[in-house]
Length: 156
Length: 110
Image 1 (spheres, rainbow over the protein chains, first blue to last red):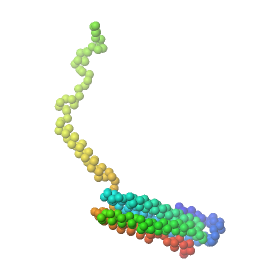
Image 2 (image 1 turned 90 degrees about the vertical axis):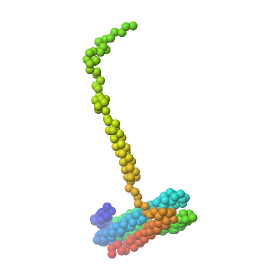
Image 3 (image 1 turned 45 degrees about the vertical axis):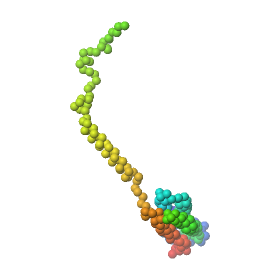
Image 4 (image 1 turned 120 degrees about the vertical axis):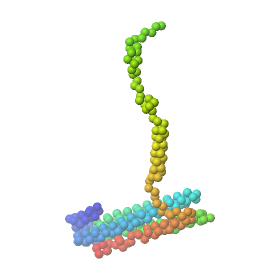
């Protein structure tokens, strides 16, 4: 859908649009090439998003499964349940980050590669990378510790 | 006090000979269900109920969800297996992150 709208921008109204964009090329052919390149990148980003969403879903399912088993065996699952809630919140934020990144990248296509057109997308990517890094930090500082505590309790 | 029967209430000869209520065929001893037939009906009903209960128990809860943590028989084993899977998913999440190069404007026309 966005590709069609963006391609329309390369038509009769393209020169007018380009005049207001700093650094934009005055060549319609370049605009088409830029949009094709962005389309390709959006496709790759979409695949990465799907892979990430699947991994996040598996993380939640694994933890849910483990909490259920610990509960069935009579262990205290209070901390693991808190971890589960935390993981769900962080996973939702990362999914939102991916969606925002794709939206911003698609929006850049309409600007035909003008300087700074991908800056909002880069900002979204920075946010995504920061949230994933924070998730990894939380994993080490909280989840891993709680799992180790439960493991020790089950061994004693 | 004397009661007089009217023509409307007085039974006629036809009423006496042909009672108004029809006699049911099933009420006749020859047409009553046999005891064995009734017992068989009960057995079939019970078996049908048992079959329905079995089917509901087998399929009523929907398709079973495969366990992502292979059961090990012990909590420590389950935690170990879960840790392994969680580690793989966390690693995949980080490894699959988009790079800054994917959003490089300079390479858009190359």
